[in-house]
Length: 225
Length: 225
DNA sequence: GTCTATAGAGCGATAGAC
DNA sequence: GTCTATCGCTCTATAGAC
Image (tube, rainbow over the protein chains, first blue to last red):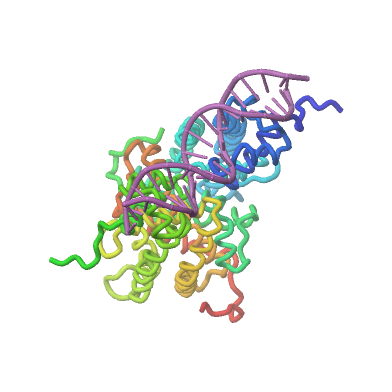
């Protein structure tokens, strides 16, 4: 068997290890010395292959974003009402969060990459902010539009706010899985993807369906793109 | 007028400026050189007054936690059903998040301190994890118990999970107020405390009221403490 | 491509003058 | 209590041997 893309070479080892360590300890929290030691490569390899520490971060995004966006959008396309299917809103929410939680299957490593984005969203890092806007704005806009069409009684700000709360629930689960385990005395495990989906989708769907406090005047609302 | 507690002395200036800068840029993201320069005090003052950078962080928690916990628990005590009042669940949620969002009034600075805790929950920082557990476990347990009593149809894990999603929505709003402003093209402002409360409380209350997927067998559930 | 060695800067902490 | 000066350490990035 011929391995066309060697997984064990220096560049791939650095990408994999950097994603994992940055996700767990933050971008500034991991030094190139720690990273290269853990990956078993020389300290100078990062600068040789990626130009700089920031170049390494950008390369992680270049590799990860397209698969995750493709899977999310494919899931969105597949949403349809039908007998025996979950309600449309639940399908849209699941299409957005399932690839972000995946640890096995087609988008394995989605959970690690989501944790990385969550951690970066906290760090005062201009590059990270730019990378997230560049790679995720378009997909988020499409999901927000789909949510707005599924819930036509909501005003625009209400749809944005509820999507924002969805992001918060998702990101906090990835960032701080230890807190719920500690508070629940081990009863809840944020690392259990199936449990997270089972708990999160109905909660968020019910939140999205909360009555609008700001009913839109009939015929005056613009259509969602 | 006699000012009994001088607000402009070195120690108070450091506490105030450190809380603000740590909340915005993280604990590891702010050096003592940046901090002391911004506060207009000498570099050696942190070690003189607080022993170390970690001592400064602990002092911030010692000052802030009691007022915030007191206000949250007072709000919880005041929760009661009655004509013309919001439903009990909405009151409990509001009692928990209002002090955490406050920027004026009795618990002014609550928003900054909440952002600090949110940022610390991301950083790989053992001291921060200990401080949060030490100062917040008891209050969180009491709110979780109140939520469990208000929603007796939910299983224990469901209550923990929904409280966890509440924390996520709250923390993400404090950590990344820029993302919703960017996505909504300025329509939503996460710095507007009243708007955040108006949007967050009904969303979370509806989420908490989502049907249980795991109905508790009658007579077998233990009472919430 | 991979290595060693190091430059150049910033870090927390502290000794010691005043 | 406040200051300057500095120690010992770690960081990213790079020059140059192999």
